[in-house]
Amino acid sequence: MKLISMIPVAAVGGLLLFAAKDFPEWGAVDSPASQSPVSSHFISHTGVDTEVPNMVTAVLADYRGFDTMFETVVVFIAGVAVLAILRGSGRRGSQKREFEVDAEPDLIVTNTVRLIVPVIQIFAFYVLAHGHVSPGGGFQGGVAMGASFILVALAWDLEVALERFSISRCMVVASLGIVIYGGIGFLSMILGGEFLDYAELEKVLPVSREMARYHAMLGVEIGVGFTVSAIMFALYANLSSEGRLKGGL
Amino acid sequence: MIEDGSILNELLIKRLNYLIYVVLLLIGLHAMIAKRNLIKKLIGMAIFQTAIILFYVSIAVKEEATVPIYKAEHDPHGEHAKTKETAADYGDKYQPVALSDEEVRGYANPLPHVLMLTAIVVGVATLGLALALCQRIFQGYGTIEEDELLTKLERADARASLSPVRKTSPEKSSPEEKKRVRKLSKSKELAKEAPRTRSQSVKRKTSRQSGNRKNESKEIGNSPASKPDKTRKKIVSKSTQTGKKDRGGERKET
Amino acid sequence: MIILQIIGILCGLVGLVFFLGAAVGMVRFPDFYTRMHAAGKGDTLSTMLMLAGFGLVTMEDFSLGSWLLLIKIMAVVLFIYLTSPTSSHALMRAAFEDDEMPLTEKDLKKSRRKAKETK
Image (cartoon, rainbow over all chains, first blue to last red; front, top):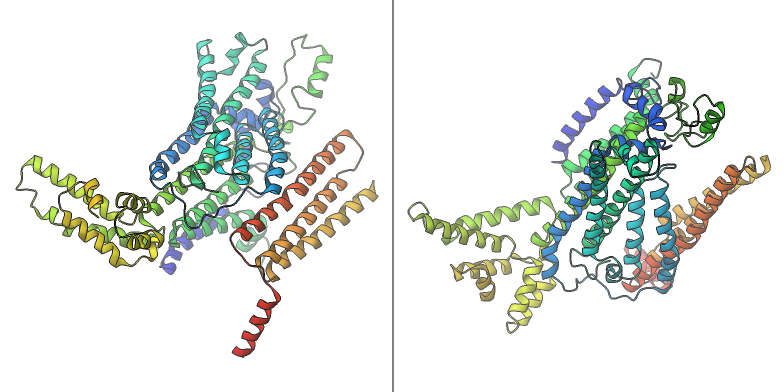
């Protein structure tokens, strides 16, 4: 079986290595991907169109905003699906597993976490809000935010973390994120543009067209951050406790 | 051997990065094909994904280029803006200017980075979903080894085909009867497929508090995989004896 | 400032030595607690030293940018100083709760005797 499995692996490897010599060299300036008019347009016109210094954020939230919106929806659906898969099993087997041990929350760990969690959360907000200027954005900030709640769950107990951020609240926050994203899209539609055409928001914001896109991107990133942070914590809470939402890690 | 133009030179010196990605990808592919443990398959999937992400990011690299964030002199709010404003050719309504081709060459390609950012996010979502499915499979069958799972499913199928309910030839009976029979056999199959479900055994415990405790604790304490097949057969045969009862009744009987 | 850079490179090298020690300890030590000892202590110190080395190497001129970078790196050092020992403590504690017994002289003697008997 192991040997038979090597045949397709070797075949794929041979094909890929055969194709590798047609790929551009490391760091080639004239590679097809870098020469394409799309990416050069992104590099040259991001400043003109949106006044955002970070091109990745601009492409992610503005040029490819539709893609990112459904990206967020994918994350949301994954969270809902995990809830749906593990829900029923959790209710029935709400008794302790044999490998679980009773342990008090450790003093050193909890105090360190007390110290660290606010810093993590501030850093998450910084990454989220500063995503236009430096590496960062909604996904990264959201993950850092979710990690802070996971840290609380690790240090104390899952129940303690769920008291602060229960699963129903997670779902509310996650759907709120998508509503923010879609709402900005619809707002720009109502104001006379196309869906997710942020430039139209200049009619309600006291700024120029470019800065309207800049600020709308921040709003969109906040929506993404909401969804991602809530879903990350919901995923952890469900997976670590097999859907029972108590005990666990 | 590694002179200019030979394949080895191409692969090992000029395009070493692709060789690394191919190796990573093959490790992932092999894990996905050959490993029997579902979690190991998932690890293979993650490695596979990493190889593709690295490949895309390496496509974005340009020689002597920096990260795709505007340097201070190109920043729409930075020095660039100030000099243009002082030039006064643009009036008081200042517009940032597009970069020239030469300046574009100084920035790495942002598009693959964006695509891979979304790919990573989708990867996390699918990985979480897959782990949840694995947990559910473990709860239902007591194993995440592929071959054990297959034998269990086969056994369940074989039992279902032997069961007396199926033998009442469905083509002779009326459509209502057929429906009823199908429903029954379905519920039976369900009960058989997962007779060792932890949750079910827990329920069994609660439903027959007065029953023999010893046997019960054995059933719950033993891990499902190591449990001898005898007990399981007993349960199944009992459930076949109870005949045409619905699931709840059956559970009470056992 | 060439002196600062030399100090920074030295810091990095010393950090690498400690890192090597931690890695060797992880492989060579006999039981869980001693291994965690090697990993927790060596890893923390080596990471801190290496990061401090990076910070010093980047202090080419004393411009605002390099000061900002140094402050950021020092913040990372501070958080590693806080979190890395805590995480190894948490792992140790988990092992202790799980009744993992530390290796004692008795165990060593027993295993030596066994090895002799098998010979």
